[in-house]
Image (cartoon, rainbow, N blue to C red; front, side, top):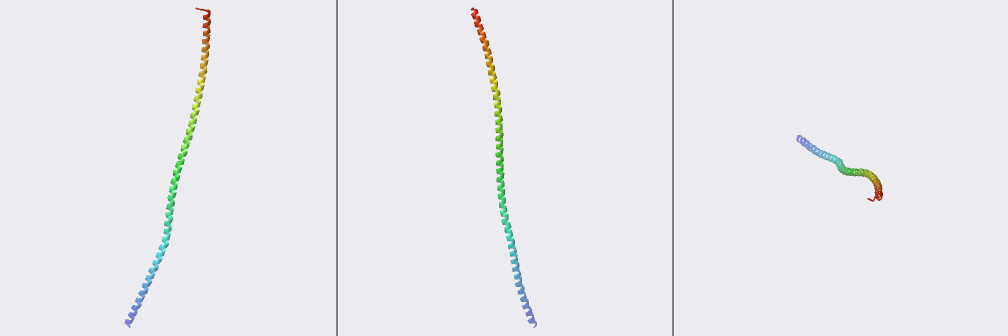
Length: 146
């Protein structure tokens, strides 16, 4: 009887150990499935974040390239405007120079006209005096043949 009780006890204990082992394996399998499910769920979020980050990096690169090109174009426009402004200033300087030269030429022309008129008047006066002297000399020679 005692030996049958011990055998019975060992059989029950063995059966409980097998049931516990089955439950332990089921619990491990369930926890592995839960862990895998959580990791998959997190991986989807991480993968989405990674893809978003890649897109943001690509857009940031494009924005940087666009900003650089815009800065270059703006610099070219500023140079063009500066060159245009300088050309306008030079044109104004040439116009002022031309006016100055024109004024100087008018002064020279007036001076030459005045000098010419004065010269003509002097020549006319000298010519009249010479003619008067010549007439006087001719008249004197006619009166005095010596």
